[in-house]
Image (cartoon, rainbow, N blue to C red; front, side, top):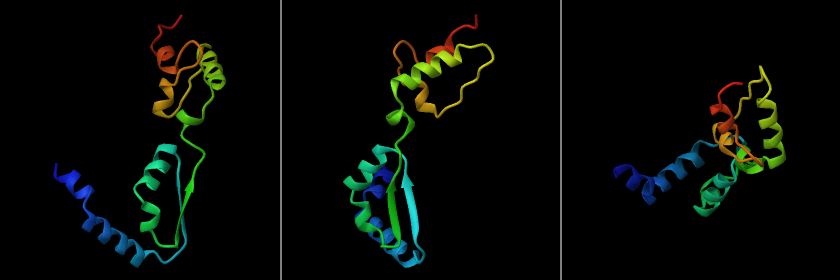
Length: 111
């Protein structure tokens, strides 16, 4: 419970913000990839705590958010081919296509 209290400590936030302002002397761009991160960053007012040298960029979106069902269907079809290995970010494995997920396909017995 102590961690949660520290996480929400306005004194700690102020100290961290002041330290970032003090040490941030060169322009820096930070890209968050996930839309959920973008929403949290703005909901908690993080941009207002950063100096002008730090620019936050919203990225293309996480694979779960931006991958179409058509792409999942094509990937499921590919992974059914002998000798094909699909690699992906962990969460994308559970994104549903029209009839299956990469996770379900991984669990299938080889034919």
